[in-house]
Length: 394
Image 1 (cartoon, rainbow, N blue to C red):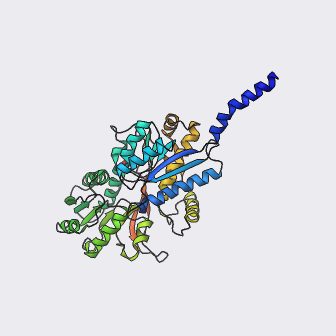
Image 2 (cartoon, rainbow, N blue to C red):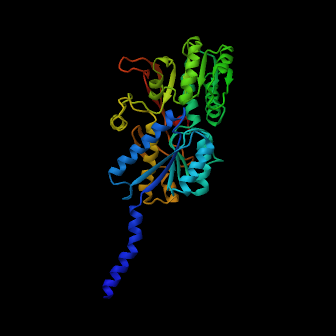
Image 3 (spheres, rainbow, N blue to C red):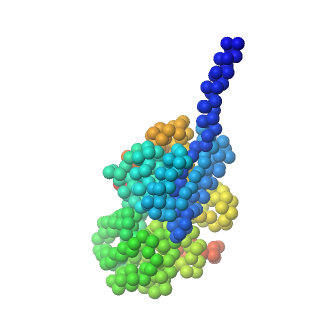
């Protein structure tokens, strides 16, 4: 009888642990799913969900399935904070992976710090997110930052036969930071360059004609732009209508992923073919077997012959989180945060590492001049080149 009672007691005590093991690991994803920013935010969330579906099919992490809870942040810092707090306090998520703009990212980072919960940013680029005075144990980035992006673009423009350069960027953290990095680096590379004009429309501007006209009156030979997403679609259509690209002889570079398949597909014949741009990914890149395999899986998952470039960022963000949980052997945020330090993950674009000193991954991007290719009904980058950001990270 004593032996039976002891066995029953042991079984009862084990029940809470068994129940805990069966509970899903909840991950909150604040991400823009409406308006022009959804051009990037929606595919990024789908890439994250694809990774979750794949790993759950293999048994999950630590024997537990992952549950992704996505909420529309509307590309607004206040809304991103609101939904993040709701995910933490009402949905009891274990981690946060998300945000798109450089206004949202730093704002949600504060929420993560307050709640001591790991937050992985797959898209926001502002240097301020992981700057020394903003860095804390729970924030990590698997995107490029503005220093890396601005300097990469400067390396390209410095080789052009131009000396009079203008810039246009939204007047907020991302636009300010990436433009500063570009200007500082191109002047170092090519001291003869003169910045003849700088335009700063507000984030979300829809009428760019006053900015375009004012800029072209200064007669620049090249333009650096960081207008992004659906906003770039509007801006470039208006610029093309007044002949800006022709006047520049297509000496125009659009960072902020102006050459993504999403953008060129959505614009079709309206895209200003001949400009330079960048992208986190391109289904036609096909650099490695791992990337080709990922692209084939993504194409099937999205039911799209020409799948999104932005899905990769949601995918990699979730990949890093899952690998850190495995390494930590726990879902405790303090343990997972420590596991992320110096963590190297084999991603579809190759091995990436999160540095210990600033929680920044060595995430590079693809750059190229856009051309028409008879294989596709929209512009692509050709040749497309992956720019290693290592030398731009400090």
